[in-house]
Image (tube, rainbow, N blue to C red):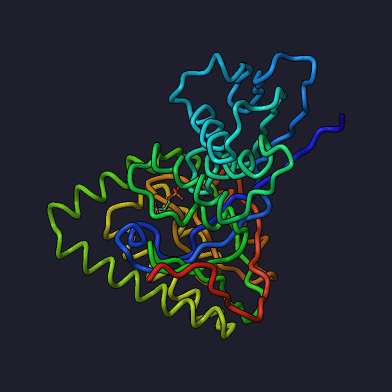
Length: 324
Ligand code: PMV
C-alpha cells in the first residue's frame, strides 16, 4: 500500500502575543515555508495496534507501546483513538519530519500535532478542521498550562486569523499582499516558561500589565482594519508599537533587540518579535525590493534562519467560531 501523508504549516503571530492569553485580540498567519509532515504506511503483517514511530529530527525510533504514557505522541494518539471510538489503532509505521525549528515561536509542536491528528489514525474517517483544532488544543493544554488557543487554531485552519480567546475566531480580509522576513535569533525559548514569567509579573503588578495588554489589544484591532485596507505603513508602525509594549512586558532580549534594530536600520517597514519571545524569531515587514538587503543585514547580525513569507490578499473575512 502507498504511504499516505499530511502536513501542517508553521505560524507567526503578527500582533497580540501574551495579551491574547488575557483575553485581548491577536492576529496570526500560517507560514507555509516551514512545515511538519507525517507519512503513514499501514503495516498489515504487524500485530494489531502496533504503531512504530520514527522521528529523525528528535532522534526517535520507537513503538507507541514503548513510549511513556505522558509523552505528547502517546497522549495525542490516545486522544484521537478515543475521539474516533476505536478499540485500537490500526498497525502502522509513522514517520514524522519537520522543518520548523523547535522552541522558536513558529508553532513546531502544534504543527506536528495537527499533521498527526489530521491524518494518521483516522482510518478513512474525516476529521474536520474544528475537531483537529480542539484535539490539538487538548495537547497544548498538557504542555503549555493555559494556552490561548491561537496556535492550534491558525495551524489547523491554515488561514490568517483574528482571534479572541473563548469569544471569536475570524479569518481576515487582506487588502493587498504583505511581504515579510522571518529571522531566527538562534536562541531556543520555552513558551511555558516565558508565559509563566509574564503571569508572575501580572500577579505582582496587575494594573501595569493590564494596561499593557489593553494597549496591545488596541493595536490588534487597528491592525485588523489596516490589513483589510492594504495600509502597509500603518501595519509597519503598529508592529513597531507592539514591539515596544512586548519589551515593556519583559519578553524581549538583547539578541532580539539587536536583530530588530538591524532590520530597522536596513529599511524594515516594521519589526517585532513573534511568539513567546526571549528568543525564537522576529518578523519584519519589508518591501520586496529591499527584502534581500535586509535579509543579508540580519544574517550579518547573527540571524540563523532568515526566510521570506507573505500574506496574500483575501477579499472577505469569515466568522469561523463565535462563542458568545
Ligand atoms: O508558542 P509561541 O511561542 O508562538 O507563543 C504563543 C503565543 C503566546 O501568546 C505567548 C501564548 C499563547 O498561548 O497564546
